[in-house]
Length: 403
Image (tube, rainbow, N blue to C red; front, side, top):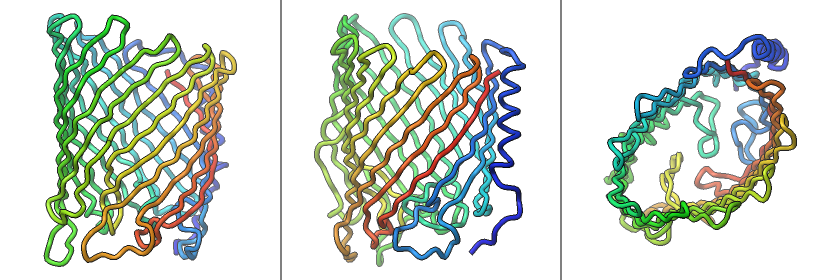
């Protein structure tokens, strides 16, 4: 068990930071139209930080903890002829009251070049890098475990006719974990795709996309004499953007997917796969977003590494006034885990997570925001898989200023 820290409480530490952010926003004007520096601070309380199961003994110490996050960075947006370079760079310091062994420095960098050649060729080239604390949902420990995620991508489209275009894209995701006992989750995913779209005059489009995903693990898990090495996934999906009316749009990227594994072929699966999103704006001040999905995903667990996820979510944004905005969202997701020969599951090899958030954002000045939010998270899980049932709730207050 970690001993309690003697550093001052998060509430006392964040008060001068909040006041400093608000003062800076009132005192400083914009520095540049291209580069926008910003600073922010946040204070958060989580009553089950490590996402411990309901019946799990509190050997780590208290279930809840408070954290302070200080962040600084820059946003940039620079036209270069017909091209446009955008991105951001930010660093953060996160400190916990009790679990101070989890304190870390976060990093987040991304850049995107929207390129265009002539009147018919366009696309994007970019990348990102982030370093943050790994979520505790599937692995419970009070040892710090930073997750580093890198992404590189390129895509292009050729509009060979006013109503038709062809597209191609490549993405690489690279995940690595700091904690040695979690390094079996280090992996690389490469995705290649090609597609064709019909572009309607209304702004809607309909198309097809074929995609191939390859995943490999740097430190494969061993089951007996076999290594759990990697997987491939082939997809054929409809790609639709439908302007139903002036207040409703629907996006669909859904179809058929087949997932194959290098070993333990009984884990292979196929079927419907994709995501549907609807945006509805019944008024100028009220907006809704609804989503539903069915797709395969990686799992950061010591027992399984893949699942078939089925979920729905709804989010609302209300512009209460020119300076005040309210938000709310709900989400439900069920994960069905893969089965492996020689490993016996006790009970249903799945879990279901439900979550809800509410928040308020107040903008006293054009470049200053102050916000409060609260969340509730609940899971019915499988103890054998390390995804036991838990409940968590918390709240945060934050302030930010852009110069």
